Length: 122
Image 1 (cartoon, rainbow, N blue to C red):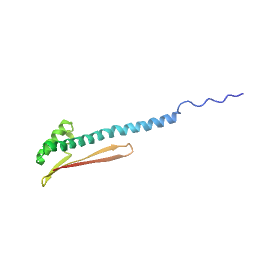
Image 2: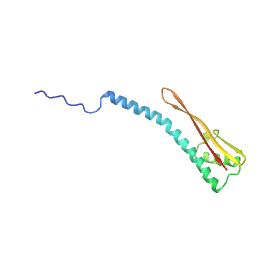
Image 3: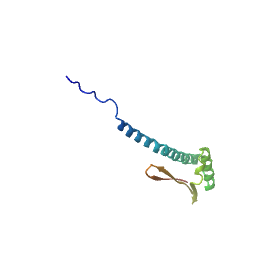
Image 4: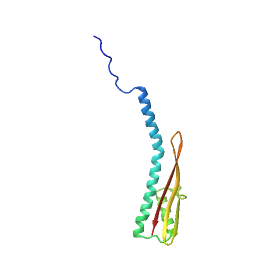
């Protein structure tokens, strides 16, 4: 009697190469995207801190808000964001707005990412 050939054990070389390519692409994109998410969450945290401090120590002018914001950016080592925000005051309402652009290189195209966040203080 003939014995049947044993079934293949493990993945073939082609499947392994495809899986490694997909994993490599995911890591490549993740290395670029994760720092952008962390930066965005840090700005959210800074705005939340200012909003929480507003309840106990109210900000009375745009200059005070700008000073507090610059201090928090320096504490978080985000000095490169100094040109990315505006503080305006109209009728006693202070508005803090962040606007900045980043790029996500996908290999086959560069995807522009625009981040915009704002907060009003009364």
